[in-house]
Amino acid sequence: MTPSEIAGRLMMLASQMEHEKRDSAAQACSEAAALILIYLDNTTGNGGQAYDRSVNATVTPLFDSLRKHDTNNRLD
Image 1 (cartoon, helix red, strand yellow):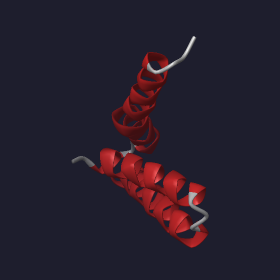
Image 2 (cartoon, rainbow, N blue to C red; image 1 turned 60 degrees about the horizontal axis):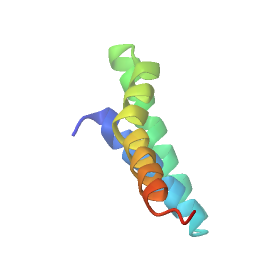
Image 3 (cartoon, rainbow, N blue to C red; image 1 turned 180 degrees about the vertical axis):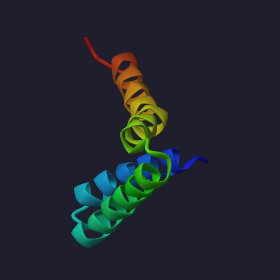
Image 4 (spheres, rainbow, N blue to C red; image 1 turned 135 degrees about the vertical axis):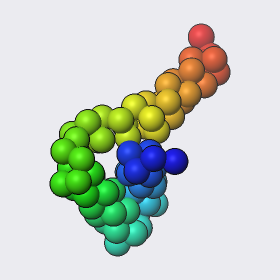
């Protein structure tokens, strides 16, 4: 798993924790993701690209899967 994928998963976990009203855990996950992206930016100069890769690698497939599931289970 790449650092970008780890950051993406941390963002997803933060969202889940926020939904569960676990604010301190959500903040910790968000901060960890941000630190990974800052590190990538400082060491490789591609922090913005790392963010895009993390979203494309983890968040986008999740939402696509949810959208497909929702479309297949609609009652018309």
